[in-house]
Image 1 (cartoon, one colour):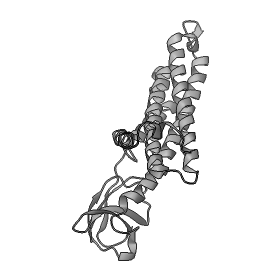
Image 2 (image 1 turned 120 degrees about the horizontal axis):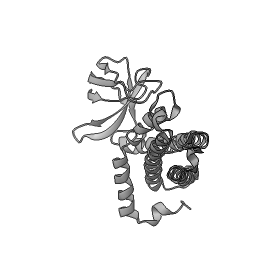
Image 3 (image 1 turned 90 degrees about the horizontal axis):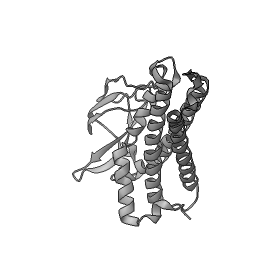
Image 4 (image 1 turned 90 degrees about the vertical axis):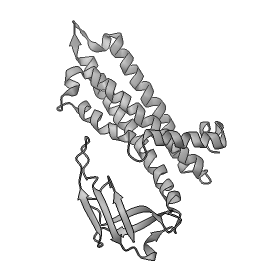
Length: 243
């Protein structure tokens, strides 16, 4: 029987089935369960309204004496963390790619605006403080695009060490999501008051990108994963591509 609650279940408002990780048995082993959302005892209690504007919701669920058959235990009792590591590796790489793409779009908009917008008789792109922000954005995007491509390539190679890959995906997610936040902030600043106006896309990007430092593991969790890999395997494990 499953008992407990889960907050922020992405797409839970439209899902027919839920993947639930819970502690199983007297030894409280982390285990994944396949749960029918219509099963007795499963209740969606609230759908929070967030800063970002996702198509689907992230509702909260409670589980009260929910029966789960043996065949609906995924991967065996106690293997929940290993299964979710695989998911997190893919998802964190996806977040890295998405945030780099969003940052590129924000910079394109800010660059075009800076070239066209005139103040004191000249385009604001001619002023060094604006140029500095544009340059910093370009650097943040370039280095994170390159690293994300590298780790994604490694993920496709046979024989890649999955534990090191997990830490590299955390590195990509941490670096790219934090960089995209900086880029969005600078680009909004370049637009000035118009950047705070909801009719301009950079305002939405500023809101949308904030969650990428939280979901699929916060930036703080990524730092713990990276540090743990460094302590166990040394600096070269994360610095070099997998052979």
